Length: 284
Image (cartoon, rainbow, N blue to C red; front, side, top):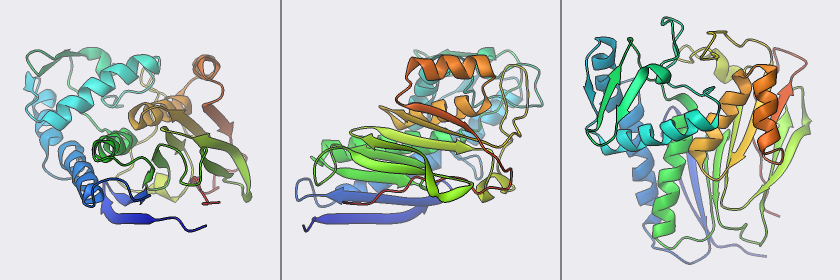
């Protein structure tokens, strides 16, 4: 069976982005508009070149009140406020080993005034959350353009789908085992959902700019080989949840998983040298 499809491929947020649109419905320039939405998130949230986030960090590290003038950054902070609570505080983009307390807990976010106040020096590093948030923004653009079937990926460990698979039903994804690529840790089917994979092993974890996986409240650095998989309605929540599962102590990991056993998974891996997992999907 032939499937009509368009694709946009580009580099952003330090990874390869792919946007696949299926079917004839929707504006012809929808993928380009979605790409621009992702690039706008990259421009706002990056800490690897001057951005709204680096300007914010400079003020917060200096102990100053920080205005949030960029609308994309503002929306990201609103999303973080929600997922921080949903992850029992285990996702914290302002946590840093240099500081004595978890960053987000020491921040007051005045939404009405669009300002941040911090009780201790803090700095944001949005990490994988930024990819999920960017896919959310791209998805909003595509839906507004009338797209009813699409698959968006950022580095293969961050995936979002719109609607059903072009052949009907859910989008099938398998997360390969890092110790045996021919075996799967978990298989899921997504409809209007996002998938995030976080791991402490693999080539990407050794990148110089990669921050250590840190449990926010007790500052523990997570080095045990493990892989977390989370499915959620939004990419922002999926990314935050997979990170939270990865750094969670056993008690809180159980609590998070028990809240949604069909969509949250944590695997202890047998070998610290195993490669990181990435989701794979085949159109069937």
